[in-house]
Length: 314
Length: 262
Image (cartoon, rainbow over all chains, first blue to last red; front, side):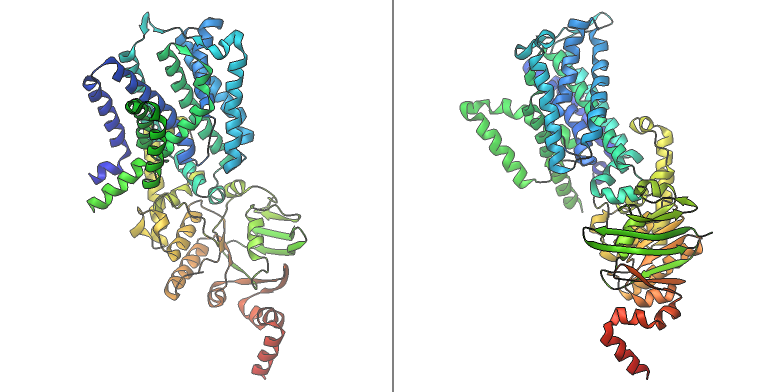
């Protein structure tokens, strides 16, 4: 049991098993849809966790990159004649380039200042999509044409369950690979002591930028899936509130824990659905639950459970 | 030619001149100690040489190249590494991972290969770990290789920093109070490690308050007082220097010493 807990690849296999086993257990298409949304959010949070949990740099603007992915698959086919399958990688490239050029100056900032700068970046993107009504439909949003691969049209919850589930497993596998590599060690070193990392030859500015670009790529893919699945995008896709949601998911599940990102995202997608029984008080209960979680499990759900299991085992 | 030449270094913070016209040269394989009363400017001098502060005057020549004002990661590439007086440990990583970070410059840094965990990356990880384990054995920390570094006692962390700095394969190693907080047995162990390092041809520059250790292992000692050079020479020469005695013990102490000698 202990070795399984320690081996990060066992976790990836576990997630893959859950994706496969869960599907036939879901009673209706509604549940399949909620699960697909959980996977899509988890993918974005996974990337944010590489940036925040491993490299130790905060971002309150990741909905901006999520929005770039979402609007790429909407605007590309509608206005530029790009097929959906090509619009998705185009969105990824745009998000990576924007992260690279925005990240270079703002990653020199630390702590609260970096938080405010990334927040500004996210809000700026939301303003652009709201105002460029000719291209994006403004606040009313726009339709997203379906993803068509080799003549097969990808639509409906079951299809997106599998697409997002498989991508999530691959995303988790890549994140694990990264963390156990020289690049991942450089990220974690910068998080704990930038001075010491520097003295050992780690070019901290370069690695922070790399973490920022990688996390933007994850967010952009998740955003594209979200728009293609929904068939519609509005500026709400890229709102500040969504950036905050991503951060809450990452912190709730456990910063620095890859499984934590998936658990955090799943809880924050599923819980509001489950809490609809409280009707008008839904949001109050949700907020109270988050506070309770953070008071009793301040390191996040997955790290807290892991240390509990490890003390039991020994 | 000297490995490290420091010429007329100067830095001031506001009105406070912390290092004022300090010069010295360090040879390969020598143990060179910087001593002086608290606040003399030793750690500031270290911070300038290791690139954490840029000097406002003077220059630093490392192995024939002017490196004044280069950032620390550039200096690491040129063979300079250091430890910290106020520990800078990667406390969320394991002990062996701390040392593995020190191998950064000697690893292939192809991010795409890292993302997909190509076999070459796994082989390299094994080689890096083997090297790190060897260094942990050198400083006597093999037993705690896989425990989180944050939980180690102070003396062990001091030695971990030495192992981590050695992992970069430096030509010159700056040690900021390596024996601080160590008990006498640990101090002797650190002594032995430093001698082994110098025997490999690595120049060691050391700031230390434990005078027995300094006198024991240093080939030369450079004394700072109030930001300036007070004296430089072998342990015997420095010990016999009346100005050094006055700086350490104050004017009154100097008279006491004279009386004791008389």
